[in-house]
Length: 467
Ligand SMILES: [Ca+2]
Ligand SMILES: [Ca+2]
Figure 1 (tube, rainbow, N blue to C red):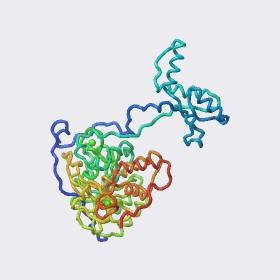
Figure 2 (spheres, rainbow, N blue to C red):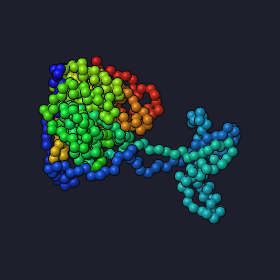
Figure 3 (cartoon, rainbow, N blue to C red):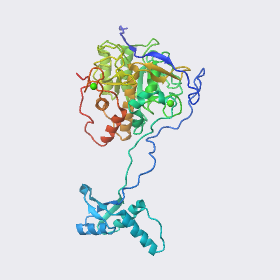
Figure 4 (cartoon, helix red, strand yellow):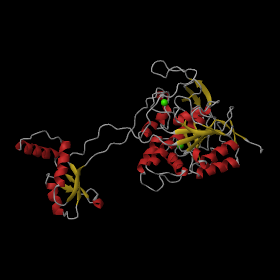
């Protein structure tokens, strides 16, 4: 066999066991995690409450071909209104403004005469005015100037540990959840395995592959002797709003366990490269995103070729910048096809261990809460390993939103979306400590909202390396 390069080590450290909370918190861990209770699937955007009333005294009117200016004025006059052009001439629509109080009073008086007096409020007056205008000559249709609400999500998820996950708020995930839940998105986790029996991961694991044993994993009874992969997977896609444990940043995304690391946390180039190629070549393992919370200084050509292959195959590649605290290039993160993620603490100060100079963005990577293995419900770990899945989750939410409207963007374009919406930190502009800044899932998705139906790139190409 060809000599294998020991490629990388997993990039997390400082494990702090977290004891279960008394009262209100998750139940005490037992020898085997309890099976996941049935939870209704997350489907789309949550309801936003009451529908706002239409704008008072305004009706939008579409004129028919024969509607000349005299007919228009006459139609508007039927409700005591006047015609206003508001820039919708291209679609034949004008705004009729009228005095809603006067119109409502007139209707009340009429009803009084006919013996059917009842209160007519302003909302009702808008609908009635529209109906009256619609009956006039030269009018194709008329409708109240209805209002819509911004789609805003829940301020919090109901997971009991949510308040111990300040990074989620810092990255704008709760707002992003109001726009997308990442449903149907698969994040391949190239790591030490995933404990898919964990109550916050059961049901979120898709079929995966164990490259050490050369065999598929079911996504049901997978194991993780190291614990690293389980933690990373949960940060991205733990079951959210299920009243159990923690929230996953990607809310409803699924993970696939691509086990490439041994129990000591080492990954060889062959396993990593094979996993990347599998994500593209084997339809059973197709993935939208690959999270690589590993790396090292070896500039392997094979790994680089596999990265290029996976990106060309449509996989958005996200990796950890490394925990050496140096500016030395760290692979695969330093490759240009990879969204390279450094770590910051809860105050968005650079984590002391986070490598510099090669990452595109930063995310929370100090004392991050995630799923433990075995009987441990949650643990805290620190590392760029923990930062990377936050960025992967932002990608998952964006990918899910695009899929809902029938779009699929290239990995490069999605990478540019995350980079282009990052919040600048430290020195103005891209810098060695923070790259382009901290991941803002909310801003990324809001930019996607703005680009609905737009076929031009959401953001101009940006040199992710910052030069
Ligand atoms: Ca949960
Ligand atoms: Ca900066």
